[in-house]
Length: 208
Image (tube, rainbow, N blue to C red; front, side, top):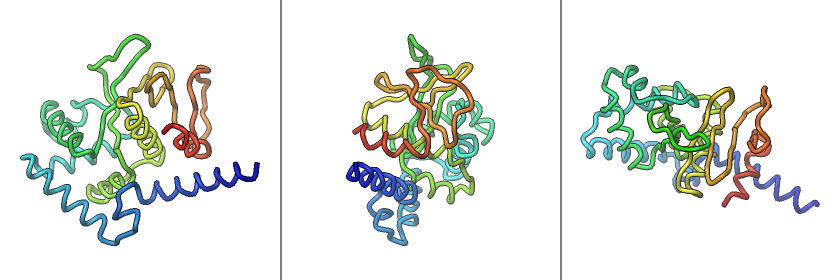
């Protein structure tokens, strides 16, 4: 029992470190230049892809501001004054650079591609660095949700969400997960796993 408690404490300690430092070698080793080096490479890659840094910053800002709510390309486009097709092309670049990924809507039967999507960042260090770069803060609940979405994406290759009278943040390989910073205020179906700050680190440690 003591060993189990010790392991649980260690998992939670490492999770706190992951929230702060992410998974990049420079950030893990707390290199003071980690953010600057990342941003230099990121901006260079955006320019190489033929995209505008200003529009990229606007798109990142829009996602951070509205997360963890589902968004459409059209909504982001209205925020930054471009067409939904332009937003879609920028999203593809950010996906190819492993900055973000996208969870589409899925009901019990199929994926509904036209529905709003959940945009999520793949690493806490990236989210924190781009938050500073864009000047836009994000909610703690969004960060927890992104961490679970990214983890399930790495494990199962795809992740979706569902929403009607209640929301399921993450659906992957039969798992249905709702992420909450506090305790849920409504009843969820029995097959939905509710994660909060206490049990989330343990969940991540066993889904490998």
